[in-house]
Amino acid sequence: MSIIRFARLLGGKLKRLLVTTYQQANTQAKLIAAEPSLATAFEPTSIVEKSSAAAFAVIRTGSIVKNSALERHAYLGEESLLERSTIGKYSYTGANNIIRDTTIGNFCSIANGLSTGSGNHPTHLLSTSPAFYMRYPVVGISFAEKDVYHGHPHTYIGHDVWIGANVFLKSGVTIGNGAIIAAGAVVTKDVAPYAIVGGVPAQTIRKRFSEAQIAILEQLQWWHWSEADLQAAAPIFQTGDVEALQRWKQAR
Image 1 (cartoon, rainbow, N blue to C red):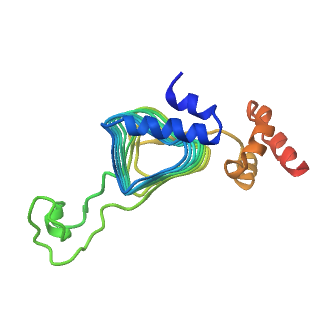
Image 2: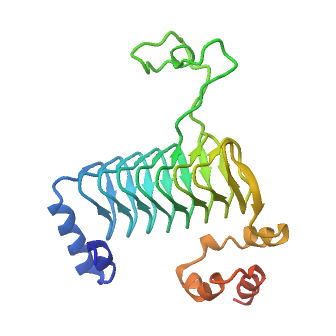
Image 3: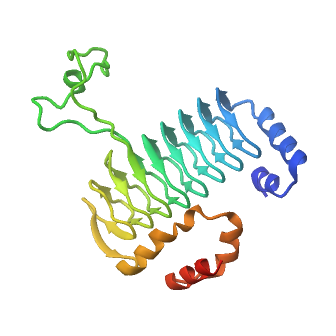
């Protein structure tokens, strides 16, 4: 059993002592203006700068987190970069991800190799080089007196989204709640809620539910429910019965 899982089984003071001792012993981890909470784990060689991590969040070995936040029970896989981004509650990523300028919702399942927030370049200007459209000297020099193009629009990944391995998301896209992105997809435009997409460029394959059922799920917003409600409704989540979940919530 890992130190993280064991810590979760313990109560208050003992849990805090165990995790604090683990972190102090981990001399290879580097924390700079970070805000770890109860039972938060920064594993060896991880670097966390100007970021926060809520209870039970995990940052795995070799990952870099800058100006970002991990919410309760969020999990960042090995050798990943998280910059100016947020990972929502109960969401996890695999290894070797590059995540910049991105908000990830709750209950997301993200495999290895996600690339998002890599930036765009203008195709309507004479040159696509940032030396001409932004003042920041990317290559050590800039010929621009002002910024004329913003190449890093924010990317939004909704709640309960499943992203397969080695997916590329173009900066600025929005992935709707409940969507599934097939492995290897290149997503260049917004993805509708509960759509399954795949390919290069990604195209819609089908919807997971009917439009009426999708409307119910969007209205229920179960991803914001309390842990008590989620525990009580767990047997329904193990089915595909959207209407049963609606009836259960209405009866509460």
